[in-house]
Length: 140
Image (cartoon, rainbow, N blue to C red; front, side, top):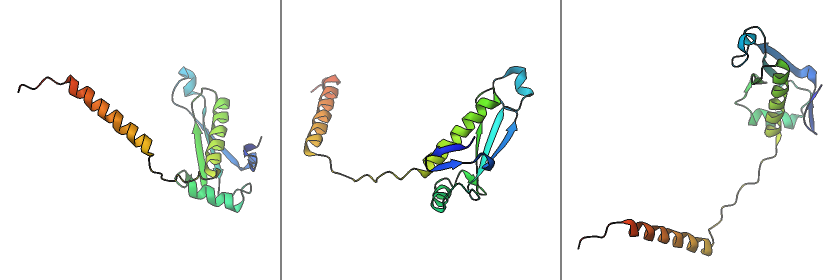
């Protein structure tokens, strides 16, 4: 079953690498005997599924997560290896979709309107008056 990240990107199963190990956490005595922790790795540098533009974008945006061209995600949230496999696939798909998403438009700095400034100052004055009324009267 191939991993569909987006309509433009589907990663073939043959490019995904799986490793299993013993997981910490819930499971009782069963946790000591089963390999339910899942590590899913995918080589970004050598993948045939990516276009050159996609590859460069992923390598630039996910540079902290990529080690020697390989991106790895782990899952050990569930007791079942099958559920952890599904979680790892979803994590990788989310990570890649986030890395390939177009950049958000830059925010243009704007001045506050005259009305909003007036309201802010009025609220500030009201708060100051409330606090002044809480004080003890001065002995003059």
